[in-house]
Image (cartoon, rainbow, N blue to C red; front, side, top):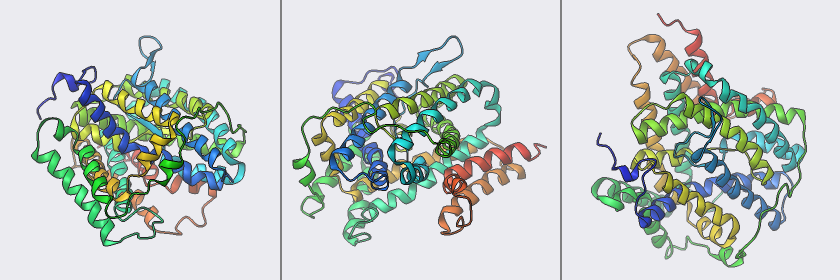
Length: 436
């Protein structure tokens, strides 16, 4: 595989025009995913006032900026440890916490989420310091399986968007599906048959063309743009914070699991974008930074954050790992946090357009997992069992409604995620099955 020019490496500095274009591509890929959990959790917490919902959306934007900056510009803690991974990843509101967020919101409201988040983040930080001692328990067979499960779990999200998005009145219409797959064809064409900047910005170009085509189809609603304010300042702990033991326990379990996902995403970033293994220092700093970000996100009114796998996929697809590009993307996200009108424009992008653009990205994540797994000896039966069972059981549970109906609610929060189950099974099976 040919190396990217130095200007696209982590410390490289592409021309300003390319930085803005490639950064906007990252922003578009993560924007909807960053605010959707807010729109789902708010009604469960009894929040119906548009101003309060706007405050939560602003919190999500600012939290994403803070959490990403922690990863991009780490703080040294001596020779072995630091806060932040120093890798080109984007952090945002995580869908992985959706189940636990919904449960806490229905019982204690949003303040209960923030309280659990603060404590769980503080508990998570020591995991990063212990990572040099426990990393041996997460070999390529485990991290590769985790990355593959992340990619596979994202495919249904992209397909739902292509169909129109969950809850859409015209869900599954031929018009939606046709628009989504047309954008997919554009991504393939630009990424495979063009050169230079257009090849690197294949997703952005495809979304722009898809947006233009959606206008005469009646898919664009700009009402929210007209209603949105030009400028608004987010508050600190504006909605309050409360602490409840059951919520703290559930949230802490999810942060432990998220540490595994973070290991997978950081591994995918270095393997797919930099053609090298991730270092222990990068993993340790990433986990420590994620724990600190949990506390800071709660203060700014944001829900739990994690690495965004779709942006990892873009790095893998384009091989552009420049920190400046990620910084440009996150600055645009921060601007949207202060300028609601800008956020409204991004959210007006039709879901079929987003689905058609992101399904290729998700496939790259899965292929990165396969590349890592391929380094293991697959002629060994124990390796086949670790990978096969982890993916089979983890992927099957969410596909069987009611299978967890009699499980304790706190366990249901954990076992309802295919990534969580696959990650846990891969780790446990790798530990207990004999190596010889």
